[in-house]
Image (cartoon, rainbow, N blue to C red; front, side, top):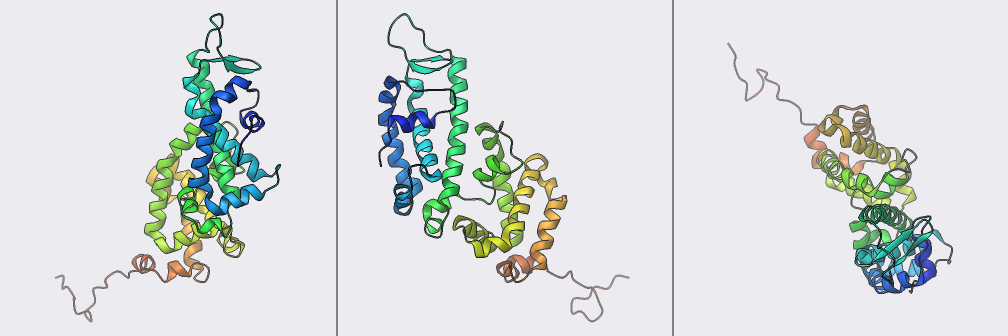
Length: 277
């Protein structure tokens, strides 16, 4: 695979057009980013998917965007950029001043957000039976509450930024641990595997619980452990508890036994009867 100047220009946020000298300065970093993503994210399965996709396919477009933005972000602060309302270039003489730190910071923020969105879409579009079983899939889709859900669910707003996504991480990690404690690793891992593999047969019955897990995570991000008392969590528990067929992995687990330990009944028939005068 090889990315062109046109790919680079299309990858940047709306309203910015790259001049030749910028692309020439950034192209080595783009080549490095391409190698990294082919290795870390695509693997052999993903490379085949991307290279065999049509030029105007969503997967190819978002992957190119991901690589180009990542490459640019890795070097753009080393360049003396001049920013204008119609684009940016590199300072080439003493009569032009580099862009202010505030404008460069703002550019970095918009690029990091665009990078998150491009990565979210690329990973989402890679989901398949083949790619979903790879180590890359497990690395890029670690939790039920995904980067794609954060930026593209129906309630998401266009104002969400990369910083908002970073701020969400503690809640995502905490709720994953809570789900695993309550329902067991095996059940949670199967929910994740069904999503990574885009397995329709499993995703259809899992759909409502996957949504409730995301709702629960959103509540945890603002409420912390108090989210355990919310209707979203109660509905989540009720649905999994009431369906021993769909959630057989949980119903046969140690987590299920732990959640259904009967309290000790202090009766005279008990060998451990305690007399309380």
